[in-house]
Length: 282
Image (cartoon, rainbow, N blue to C red; front, side, top):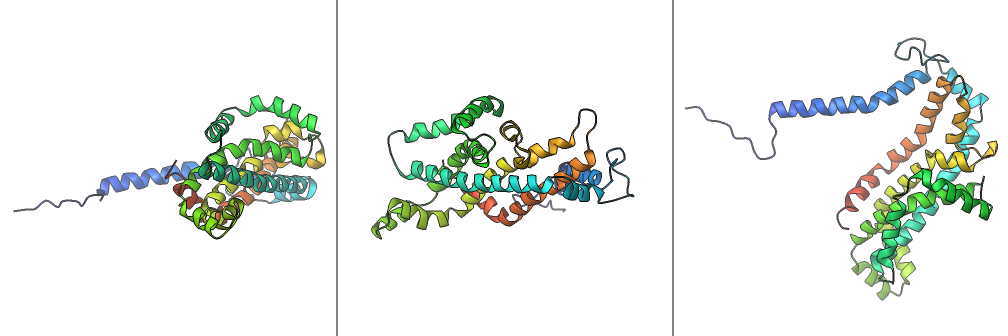
């Protein structure tokens, strides 16, 4: 008499496993195709857009032209300075606000978080005109500081919400032990809470960096000096009224991806831990 094998709970059948892996492979190919296509166009020379998938005639002329004959390095340094400034200022403000709302019960702490949430609802197009007027009155148009403040106004509300949820997962007994040892509230935050919150801080740092690194609308509207162009503004010079330099655009795009990829590579362990831990408690 034949016996029917019963699969343990959680074990997939062979057909389900094949279907799952096929779906994952297809999803990976779809996700990688735009990146591979951009890389192929960038190494196909000046007319790489016409026959990008041909497996011959590779050249680095687009990269040498971008690095040697354009202001790409200046744009790169400007973007790196603004992104780093946004990351430092944004994380400091968001961490302070998130910790204060998580631990302190002051008048208006709940409306403060709802205000942050409402700020996230406005599209960029709506914010350009009021922010332009504010920066103009403060004398911060066409300046690194003005663009950093603008990016912080966009990224801090989301980061404060995220860090508030992460700080809620840290036991309050740690704060109490800091007070017993004579630490001030800021000393408790800086010496005890910040080291424990490194995964959450890594997530917000990565988010604020990308917010400033790849932003287009604010940089185009607020920066007018060629020496202060960011990458988003500078790359627009490769697009003329009648012709676009696709080879230069794609080569620049590949170079722009490198810093973000390196940042993600070194912070990926903290990113995964921060995203999972921060969502366990609201």
